[in-house]
Amino acid sequence: MPPYSDDFGPFGGRIWLNAASIGAMPKVAIEAAHEAISWNVTPSHLSEEIFHDVPLKLKEALGRLIGTPAQEIILGNSASYGLHLWANGLPFNRGDEILLVKGDFPATILPWLGLRKQGIIVKEIQPKGPVLHVDDVKAHLTDSTKVLCATWVDSFTGFALDVKAIGNFCRDNGVWFLLNGTQALGTRPLNVSKMPVDGVTSCGYKWLCGPYGTGFCWLQPELLAVLEYNQMYWIVMKDDRDFDQIRDYQIRDDVGAERYDVFCTANFFNFVPWTKSVEYLLAQGITEIQQFNDKLVERFLQGLDSNKYSVLSPKECPERTAIIIVSHRRSDHNREIFHLLTNNGIDLALREGNLRFSPHLYNTFEEIEQTISILNNSK
Ligand SMILES: Cc1ncc(COP(=O)(O)O)c(C=O)c1O
Image 1 (tube, rainbow, N blue to C red):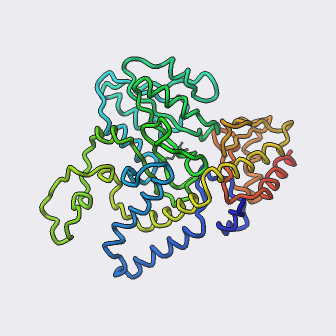
Image 2 (cartoon, rainbow, N blue to C red):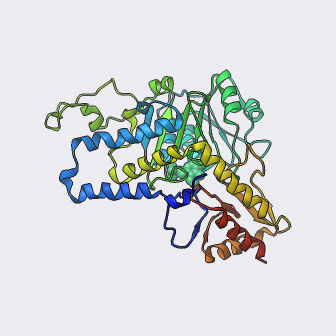
Image 3 (cartoon, rainbow, N blue to C red):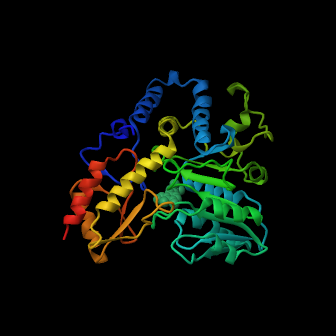
């Protein structure tokens, strides 16, 4: 296993166990960011090729990440970008039903709620167990169900849903399965050409180690073909005409996913380093990263004093993820323990009253031991 940690940092002497909020960028991405800034320092370096190549290279990397051609990738600035595109652009009629999961992250819920005004029925499924199961979907399926939109790995519980089982059920029943992969992509492999998912969205600044303000989404080609959202970005419509011939306002109808790219698509400062981050992760291997992260998680769970703490996230694979949710047996101590850790140089998150640890490839076993030692020796 390579020492990934050498490729990151410096971390200012702190331990960053918070990839579920923001992931650290690898050194190769930092170098690329410096280069992108240098283009603006000397703007004559901003050639037309750069405008073309920056989004293309990022799409190629993201395409490899999820197993799809680069031209099917839509570049965004967040996970919400894709969710809004779906909610606002897919064809729905009055009475159609959208299924969501109660307790899901708000980014996955809110864009759909606005559709209620149009007579579309939005239902939140309350899972019977700790994570959505195919039986929960079965119990809520009706002839009007059009979409199931859910988050792959839950930010608050650390549970992963069974994408294959749920996706197969949706496919068998003519329901579009749209997945928010924000807390999974970069630490869990996904190949959309083999998995029964119809759409994926993710931000880029967590497990994909990109800068804040990055994201992408993908829709399977038949869905992309029916997506109708009034977006006529002039640079996309310009095609390969020179900049001195752009005032004829042509609307191209031969554009695919790129029609929906976020505006100013050649976003140098964000997309250049993010491309390097994704390429770096791909070079390490997402399965290898998942295995490494799982070893960090295992070490954490083995070391934690179970008399003092309960682990609320899954203890075993396959539901176990790189998000560990812990509560002191007396949950009113959690806030104090959170401050104890941060005062001792360990960064984590306090979510819904619980302690959330999210180690990623740049963390080390020693860092996990140090964290455990503080946790176990707290009062
Ligand atoms: C499941 C999930 N989706 C989305 C987001 C962030 O959404 P956005 O990139 O749209 O700000 C988060 C952030 O914590 C998340 O946990």
